[in-house]
Length: 207
Image 1 (tube, helix red, strand yellow):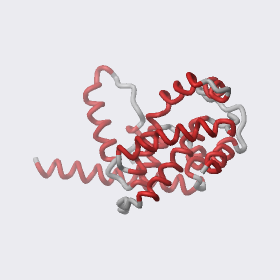
Image 2 (tube, helix red, strand yellow):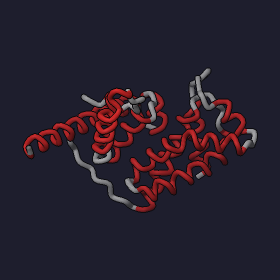
Image 3 (spheres, rainbow, N blue to C red):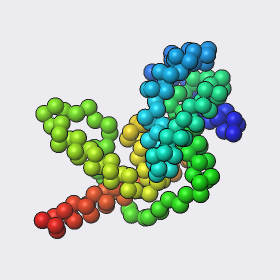
Image 4 (cartoon, rainbow, N blue to C red):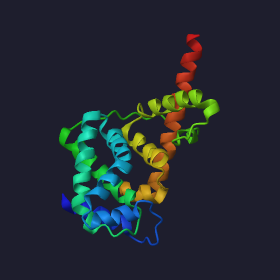
């Protein structure tokens, strides 16, 4: 299993240089054995890791277990991370690998439906005080709809909109061609838009 983390590290820094990484200083301290710095890294990133794990596993307890496993593996694999790409790109690749391994072990069957945009509102918002209540309700409604999508669509939406990874970073995290990433995200947007339209129609019919 250690090979997976080292492979993720190699993929994370392949072809990159002079990366602007806000966690770089903390990560370098971690590489020197500073547990206090590592605890701060965990605090800064564990929400994203948990969300990724949950989007793959669909179970909160499993996602929590995987989140803990990820940071154990990250601590052990830190010597192989050279900081030539953002730390979170490498971290999320490990999180995806751990989650997929857990799913295989549990032999969970995740629903696969093919519903094929309006997604820009999903970026994690800084609420406008004048519209905070409305915006928050709408934001929660959108993410509740995302959680009803097939797991593969949840994952790419989570990476792009919540974790704000670029297409290239998503390709590295998921080990997929860039074109596949773009196509998958496009289908995810279409599926979500269709789900939202259906929900709005049901609400109108119920009135």
